[in-house]
Image (cartoon, rainbow, N blue to C red; front, side):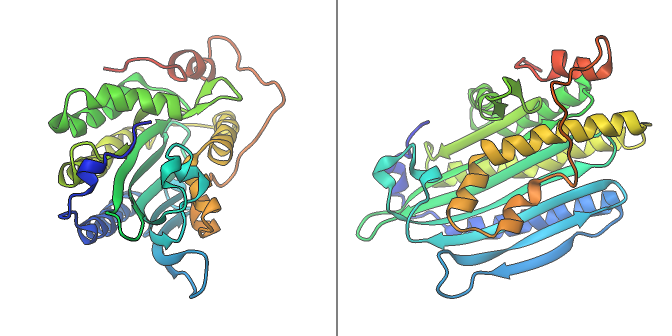
Length: 315
């Protein structure tokens, strides 16, 4: 991973309040749009850390459970501060170990009930490492990725095209770089299996300076609804039965495995003493595991593995 660029991180013009305002507004816009699509408003749970706790700060968790379309979904905003970066944040940057930090971001996962509609994840965030007498070191991270249960090539192309369009104003090299990073990150090493069809993922991003890096993060956040809504609008009425729901539960088991075993965001939240319910809002409402199960040849379930859970170019 690239290291934060200290020359740009010395930029005194960076405005943390502007990042906070953008993130809280993004959470509201997405909750309003997806709640309107579902026909069920997201519940709002504002929370704050108690004085004297390991972490300071708070956030707002927006949850939708057992909706008309979404079986479960959460959109979380958090802004927390601590006295020392947790190991998941400093492992690749040992020179930053022991620094205080402020971490803020919006993270969402939506689990539709219809197996023909994909699960989606999106996250945009900023982390600032702080040390007395030295300039703060900031970096941005985030991205979005799609996890279908039943694969559709036009959905995958649309999702990736929207991601590429969001990054294009900031450099044509970013989409292939972040697309590869996403493929490598959302990979279940213990299964030798991709989590889904990918998208984009970036971390430690500060190379062009604060304003440009912030603008890129905003472009990614603003692209989310354009990437996801057309897909679920197209698939929401696709027929399904018990067999499709059973396969969905099996595939959701893989989602649980990735989030608990490999996801650095989950590890960061738990290691830093974060709010467990908010950290684990990404979990599906139900999941299933089977011993040494394989799909029947020449079925849509088999095609998910052969054509979609592989690293490939979609554009």
